[in-house]
Length: 143
Length: 186
Picture (spheres, helix red, strand yellow):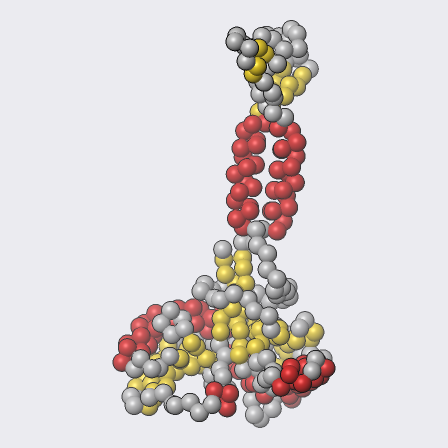
């Protein structure tokens, strides 16, 4: 304790950092063990049976995105009021085509995703990831 | 003002947060704990940000390498169906007598309708359990439709042919809302 002139008392103290370091070491060890650098998320790929929906009005067109095997590209198949089959090399191009169709037919809000038998699950998920911003509702089909 | 008498060597004032060590050569080394406290604070803040708690626990088997993708939604609570190169499991329990060889089920395990009868049977048993539970909880619960959600935890190399068989089998037991589990890097 030191004194200064005028009757004021100034308290000096030394902050003991050792217990703080101990507490930090334990906390950091715990947090490192529980930290997650990968998380699990979900892609919706389901369909609602017609009897649950009631009596739905069929959309003017049906959209199908087919993934070809052995990197042979992608097909966008449109059936209904418009009948076309267009091939693309990348999922981004296919997504762009789907976007154009959706602009023409705004009431269409889902696309059926199919693939050749040998296409890996990873390729399907990657395609869903690319197309999702354009068509959030994707249904797995072909079975 | 000196604290604690003469120091015998340097004669300087004692620094805050420093400790003294004596080496063999009678030299004093001050360990700077203040810097360590700074580093630990920054590390702790970063790890607090990465800390995550989720009430829903999805345990992925060691044989499964999930595909990675961005833009997925949050986990939901649903029945889990795992598909690997050799087995198909429901809630972690492999379907007995259903063994696959490198993602190919045996032809005798496949039906003409494009389903896997053993899987349909196993899912049917799960549905029966759910119905029994619903009826035990009362007539109000029994009247509600069964949950159509199904978490599909599949290895990234599963071919679409196998996936079609699995999903077709699931749809036979009214599992129509498929939730594909993917890994997202933070």
